[in-house]
Length: 201
Image 1 (cartoon, rainbow, N blue to C red):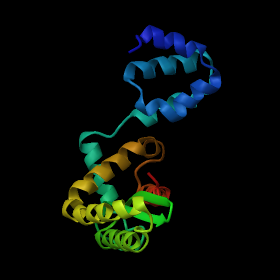
Image 2 (tube, rainbow, N blue to C red):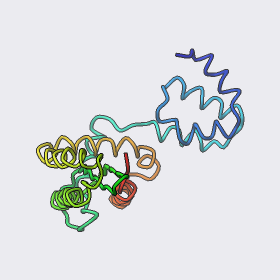
Image 3 (tube, rainbow, N blue to C red):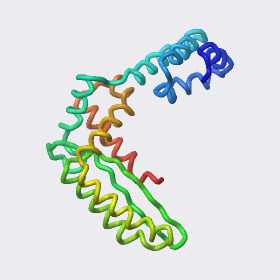
């Protein structure tokens, strides 16, 4: 592990574009002391001061009662699929599609009401049953994927807690910048559901 002074010297050698990229895209994963080095470097170079605000927003995570209130607000939104006012959950679905020599596997996370989430799971199972068997790899993965989707029904609350907490963490910066009003949360849920659609692995 590099010392803070070594990190500081490395940052001094980076281009302005590299520093801006770290601030915008990598700051969330940096240790507190390295964040201070990053902010010092932004100031020293007279880069856009809004970068420091961006770093602060991205790295000021929600904790304790503040996190509980945010998760509760997320759960109390209208379902983005059916628009019903029903408690929202985080759902995980897996699908397999095979075409002789090619196998496509995907894992999706969506925030939905329980009815829509179960429907999404059943759809993933049906797609896998119909399209998963048609390659050697697919033939092996299809039963495992179906079992995984079915077994996840036993852990809806546990899986939901993980997905909702990751959602809060991943979008910390957006919540800090734009607030936690219903309109903001609803828009971010729809964005997540669309961006996670058909994520291959």
